[in-house]
Image 1: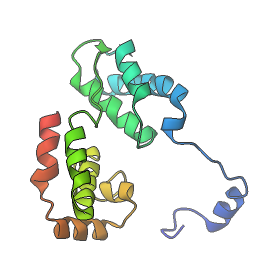
Image 2: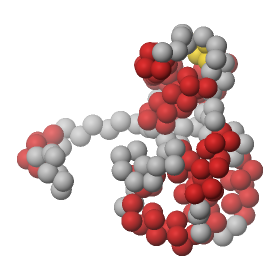
Image 3: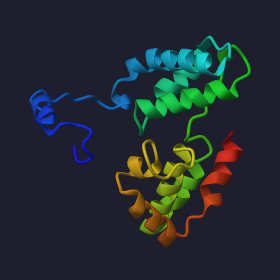
Length: 169
């Protein structure tokens, strides 16, 4: 509304019927159809001949705790489509793989260490994008200027999050 792209009277009319959409982790039955939809979408978009997700990979998707939302699932499937060379996705590249040690190490550190690690992981999940739609600032719920200040204060460098992006791919 503040940006002038949404009429304030329409917002208040729609707000009469609030819609609560539970997080993806509470709707595990929705994961297989959503994942298959994203596989179809991204295999067509990239011109790859990927047909489905293996039962093992689907089990990993449904058992993952999903700290994010449907958009996180979509990005994960897009990445899996890009990285697979077979017609069936055999492995999904979940964010927690290989990060467990880093998280447990941060939990022993100070609050500043935990905040630093959280910001780095969020920036990685956003593909290095800091601001704008789908950027880390949006996911962290803060203005981009605040994120930039925190990055500077915590001594986060591009290589802290971009280096891991190139290793993950």
